[in-house]
Image (cartoon, rainbow, N blue to C red; front, side):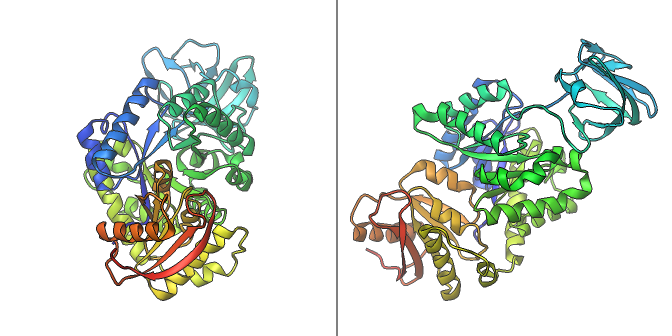
Length: 477
């Protein structure tokens, strides 16, 4: 069975050698994530080159996602590297402090004291430590430890309920966008956007940096701030994809709120013709163990049943002991979940209002394929917009995008239930249709005599012109 749900894998020290990358791609990786929170610019440039080389070796197009660090608000460093905070103890966060101790620690975000008031709750180290703000005096935030524990260098800080003023794009992010455009990253993931303006600014910077390469990446909004939730639709409208970034989001809104938010975000993304990625701790135990927990398997399966386009690994493949096995197991879980996903295409179509010709052709192809039970849906496409529309609806028939554009093939690597092949479309209609059938036969997707639904635009070879749908029986030419 073809796997519809795509896999985004973060690479790092455990997965940056050529052989491991090849094994991961063959195991099912569709998109490689480069985490710009770690490493230098040249590290990411080198890894991107290695990904392209490994993908070529595997004869697949693998997309690259550059994930910006964003305004990660952290404590500074301690004299001894860490301290143990006890419940009820007093502890100070001071922007003027150089090296921390048992009573005080510095801040990398010097403006934090301006954002806080007495009674605010600060969540450190992904919420494992909770501090209540008593007073703010100058550069110092005086707190009482409500939930203690070990606090070490550079751990993150969130305010319960959100509301910190740090901008989504830091100076480092702006430089990292330029680095990502040097290797033409297919996707740019923006951390902590609060509104559409944050995404618009990131897109503008990326388009300017990519202009010399004639490259415009797709923009991914990572939803991890509480204040982003009321503005989900405007953020979606300004983005090409969203990531349900459950780590920081859970710290800000509470763990209990995240599962329902995940379902809501995925549903909204699909309705808005956007891509949805579900991330954070999906196979966390596989950092150290060769098999996941049953809860992790259920988590991945439920994201698939929610309709996510992709599931993502973080430390599991970046620094864990079993990067290849993590991908293999995740792929197997996706396939099993998809078997149980009931296709109800007619119901899904009831509330769809067609606004574009290519959208109506895409939905017409799905409807026809579903009722005729054809072997495949095939789109001859330049930009990939037709198959993106198709991928918004669940259907148990594989979708194939045939395109001459390598960037379209890479971007479509993230579309649910879409596979891509290279096909030159510069000939006559009859020549291109014949070449498409021969390619699909050669790739063992179809056999002569199979029924397929085919879409294309006339005149051929132009972007945004899908206007034709044909039902045809495959013939070898």
